[in-house]
Amino acid sequence: MSGRRVLIIVPAWNEQDAIGGTIAEIRECVPDADLLVIDDGSLDLTAQRAQAAGATVCPLPFNLGVGGAMRTGYRYALRNGYDAAVQIDADGQHDPRYLARLLDELDSADVVIGARFATPDDPYKVRGPRRWAMVLLAWVLSRLAKTRLTDVTSGFRVSNRRAISVFSTHYPAEYLGDTVESLVIAARAGCTIRQVPVTMRARVAGRASHSPVKAAVYLCRAIVALVLALVRDWPAQLEEGSTAEDVEGGLPEGVHPGAAPHQQEVRP
Image 1: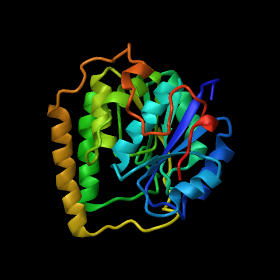
Image 2 (image 1 turned 120 degrees about the horizontal axis):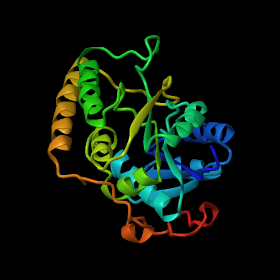
Image 3 (image 1 turned 135 degrees about the vertical axis):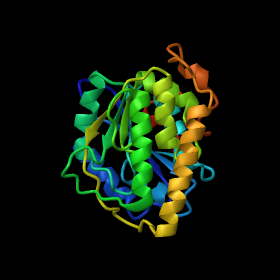
Image 4 (image 1 turned 120 degrees about the vertical axis):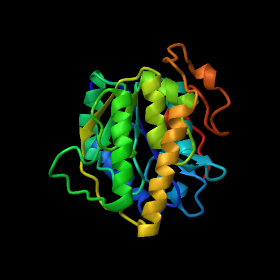
């Protein structure tokens, strides 16, 4: 990890059956990184099992969605002076064996996406309206970021200090905001965006719900989310001067600035 202090942020909502295995695999692949689970208002044993697995747990009082959970994680990363922040799903779909490759790419980029569809032999297949939406989003974001992007809805990504500074203040919470809109924000703030080909896996627990109707709804919502992201007045340049004090008050009670992860108060 090239001497970087790395924080791995795992947003989790009702993932009690998967979270323990996900944490164990992350620990095995990147043992030197700190691991923060954002328990996004879970109603099951997600927080307890994450804590038992050795992660620092930040419990949110109610469900904010991935965007809200990740903004909390980025603020934690900024306050505690991390060089890189990683977003990885709690359900086991993201393979942490790719993390070293993504982190190495930060030598020449501010945001690095673990991307599907980046190679002709990628096994992940999406068809119909959902695939059309992904292609449209990738086409528009590629032009905005001035680089080839194939999977702008991927939640598997890493950010350096410059991007952490922007995301700690401006990370959106709306539908697709944590993926599509966050890339629009990063590009407009002057961040360099790159992608690294990865292979996604099936969920460890639970079941993804897909149907033709839901796929069509996804297409419509994706287009609306993209239009809103493009017309909103996001920062025109990177906020180089952002500090931990700029986001004071943004973390839930029990997570304190300046303390090492093992010193943070953790509430089940």
